[in-house]
Image 1 (tube, helix red, strand yellow):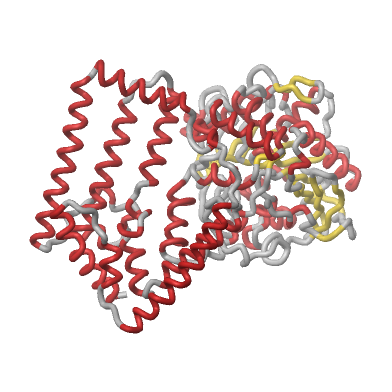
Image 2: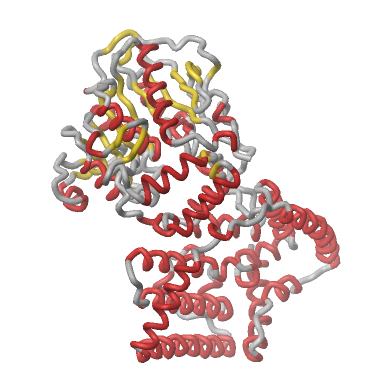
Length: 622
């Protein structure tokens, strides 16, 4: 690595000095590739150019296959842009001094940075310390700090970013929703324009290109073409090696059988691991936004395997990956399948009651189901556990930008056109909640560095996305998220008006401190409004997945346990809670065991319809 590093340093110096002097844009990449050329390098470059031409043709063909874009989901609607423009004009007319001060400060910082860069280039001295941004992993390469050219580029980006964010923060906007949307959009622009996202201003990518004689760039183009071809003309970066894992072989391997199948789900019963089991069976409803094997990635972190080892007769639902023929499937169909799965579990075990678990939207729908059972005076559910579940959407959190009418109307157009919300759009939306980690960073590694996506089971699962039925999608977005009907006036379903207060069974809610999909404070608020008098609340460290898939053997993330007093707010609860090292699984296991009845002989699931993990889990979104 030493020689490429020195070549890159020299190339950047040669490129930057005259170009900054005459005001032209730096061409560091071209200069860097020219330094140290040899006959073998020239031959290699010629070969790579031929490969690039062939890949370019494939790329153009793949891009042409993209369906007509839906502009409503590509960017905020004109109303938000007009709101921002009006706020800017209002600030300009009412506080011209404030605007002028901001502009003067920006240009002052820019000219200061330019002058410092000229001095450093002239004297061949390193950049000055920048302690405020040493924690930003995008700028971890030493040249960002030591070389005048890259240091200049980085500092100017940071100046520009601060100026944009300050403008957005100081706009006089009509409400908090507009402010949060403008802030989100500004942050997206800032992240997109980072110099690390461009080859000419990314020292890591330039260094790799020199080291590999351009091979990394060709491999990067191959990765780009592969992703565009796989995604129907859209650029969606692969986060993991799609060929490294096979569900049922090296992930999702817990032993069991499919004991029941409907057009919407398969019910899996797992083989017991103990001679005796608790009397009451346990049924898990995972989300259908992703697949159930997140709970069974590998033996050492499998919640499914752990529950079996604790002596539970365990059933798990595996959801169908719907296509356009499922356009008219609604939340009521999912609730009906919840009830059918419960009936089958009771039939197979001979038990009139059971314990249930719902994860994410699986927990939201489980809450609707429990409210329905309450109104029908059906007491089949003995206790319920909710993993990272939202039921009160009065605060839309980081999804506020995606839950306004302009974007939701765009989603409505999508489902009317395709009969479903396609997995690709859902994945893209979720990725842009964490763009540096899930979009730009992976794109740099794959397309500029030429790296093969990692063989990482969690990221493989994350990329194994599912479509959502059209009707269900709009019921969820309009009725639950936008109107917050379940927590407010009531959600109409199957002839009943369901309300959050109808959930009265004993509850355990598990949330995650760094969860950006289902923020714990919002989960807490929903649980607080439920009618149950027996509530246990657990707050795990980490996020939406890692906080749940947190086995005791890892001893990685701790958790908070607090009182069952929900009369105040979430912060008061946390301040009074007790922190414990390690996983929450054993604590929940004790809670569950107390409600699972005495031990009885283990139940053998028999041959069933087919071995686990079944058929539906293998269906990949087109």
